[in-house]
Image (tube, rainbow, N blue to C red):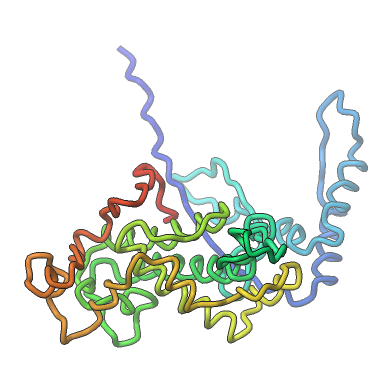
Amino acid sequence: MTSAPRRRRRVKVTVEAIVDITDENALEQAAIADIETTQFSVSPGSDLTVAQVRQQEQDHIRGDAVAAVQWFIDSGAVIDDHPGIEFAEATESAIEIDEHDIPLSVWPQFAELFPLCTCGADTCDQCSGFQVTPRTAAALWTAAGLLADHAYDDVLEHGDQHADDAGSWLVFDEFPRITWRQNVVWRRQAARSFDDLSSDLAAGDWPEPRCPAEEMALHLILRYAESAVDDDWASLTGRYADLPEHKDDHNWNMLTEILFQDTDILALFSKRLDGIEDPATDQNRKLGIGDYRPQAWFEWFLNMEPRDTGRPFRR
């Protein structure tokens, strides 16, 4: 009896690299020259000649430094030939990022997502109230993306280690001390809270927290967004020219007042109030704070719509 062939074990290898373009013109010319010496082929019956295929590739490179970078990516060369291993398949991509590693290509159309009303009528619900402006939304979205990346980096770097204030953490050392002993599962959920609020903004919605973890995330987002504007982050100032200005731009105090139902979570930073997170304590009941123990941080507020429990983690 002939035995079935043994199934090959397949391994997926992920490699990430960041390159700086030091001379766009030199890069473009090098890519075009490399295409000139590359062997191309066309399928039988194709309407294109080899020369036309080569010309199309060169035209694709001209004026696009990112495309030139992608031309030089050889994902198949990540692993050399060795006994017992055979290259199967690979894909590659190249996207432009800013100095904070945020992809520039996914910048939402904030002017369309957060349209401004300037009619000035006293009876206009939009003009007579506070507006989350395109520039404010852009700053919040940029900060949320950066914090999400840093939170996932903390998870990968530290795992289940206890957080501390020694300066080796990127985000979770800025959370209340009662969360410093949480595990990887908890931290990944907390990291996703930044992404959830970022997704709200990318959809044109105000980033209103739906659980304690999102409250903490939004407090940090507001702080980082204010710093981004004050410090002229290139990822913002380079894009602001296309966004309209408005008197409500960057009104952080008003955003805190409007977006949060309350700021009770900030009491967790006070050593004098240690234990206030527990709804069984007299102090908690007296102030009506509710359950802010870490295990309750991902429970949805009763007056807010729950998020999809099947939404993925970015990492």
